[in-house]
Amino acid sequence: METSLSDLHIQELTTAVELLENPSIAAKITNVIGMPIEKAIDYLPDNWQENISKITEKSLTKATEAAIWSLDDLVTDKPSNLLHKFGVAVTGGVGGFFGLAGLAVELPLSTTIMLRSIADIARSQGESLSDYGTKLACMEVFALGGESKSDDDAESGYFIVRAAMANSISEATQFVATKKISEEGAPALVRFIVNVASRFNILVTEKAAAQAIPALGAVGGGIINTLFMDHFQDVAKGHFIIRKLERLYGPELIKTWYLSILDLRNED
Image: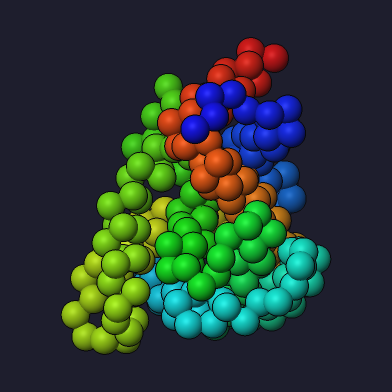
């Protein structure tokens, strides 16, 4: 096993750090809508927080079905980032036209399109989509793209989330390798989806709040969805760069280098 990274891989790792440690999607949405996302959340009806949680979990379940059974169909050599952004812009525009009521229809479609884009990016970093671990790593991106109150500022939130997800991913990988996703009694896969949903739900709530602002409408919904896709494409690229380098050098060395680069970045 190598003990030092090549110059090319140091550059790639630096890119991954920049992508994974960028401002949150809430900050990006705030810049677009012109108000703090916390204030935008006030536009959500009282009962919508619970509804969003249900919609989020349903959307991830639908996307997981796509992750397990259809990701092998991708044949492109390079990620089709612009095409996928256009796709979610269209679904976001439709969802924005119908307001919050459209979220239940729009989010499953947008989440599946985002998953296809994430898988596209995974392929470009040498991942095999026939591998169930890769399929679930694509789903993991939806958890890595968010924040939680348990994240520790003393270390990279990226590695904290991965560590928190590790057991559920391992259990779910073993399950889907031998059973059908629709089979009754799939606790390992259910736990995985719930873990991802608990983090993805934070971002979905912020997205829904922004789209709930009066007069934002279809155009605003399309813009918010484009930001959403751009955010997860960045997270996916950073995540699969890390996984590629871990295959070459081992997880511990890559984590050490990652944190060193992050420290230097924070000092600037």
